[in-house]
Length: 247
Ligand code: BT5
Image (cartoon, rainbow, N blue to C red; front, side):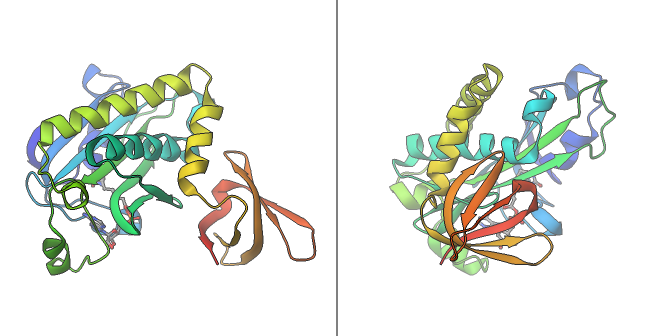
């Protein structure tokens, strides 16, 4: 646990993979980050004590190490923590945001193989999680983030950082235990429920810039099935999907 560092993901990736400090299950926590990152070099904003900021180092077995599985794991655990802390349900916005009433309460940043030596047969993944805890709506507005929210803004009670982090870690542990116990389908079902788009008309934006529109017939770690207007079904791998939106 650090008072201040640049980014928990950067520090976690820099820990020696073979050593105890950089081993499986180690969590790097910070009260404040001076260079918090989102995806594609975007900035993750926080102020001291305002957010839960942490990175988990995982050397997950091959079946679990796909980013879609690990992002879902973190998102399901954050969703359960937000429910426990704020008494509200967070929805997952593909691929890595958690939204309450349409506003972003948490973001997840998965980085694999960045900066760490490989453990034989085990790729190291750093799962970075930021959860907004104590920011007021005015604070977000002043920071240019009108579409952000926090646990305190949702439930009206200021959050103790350590207690909130404890709740978050206990859900991360419990969901990871489910994955390791072979209960991938249970985590997948929770993830699917929190995405909340099954059966709806959606537009899927693919990594190559193309779009697929239709009814989302099924979704899982193995792919999305979109029923096109003519009745044909298009299957896409989660890795090929940039965004999924209801239309
Ligand atoms: C994310 O990226 O949402 C992943 C954020 C991961 C942050 C954690 S904190 C611990 C660990 N260490 C790090 O350095 N990072 C991880 P992305 O989907 O690219 O979204 C970034 C966008 O979210 C920004 O461009 C803003 O629009 C918005 N944003 C920034 N700070 C925010 C906040 N506190 N709350 C809500 N939205 C925010």
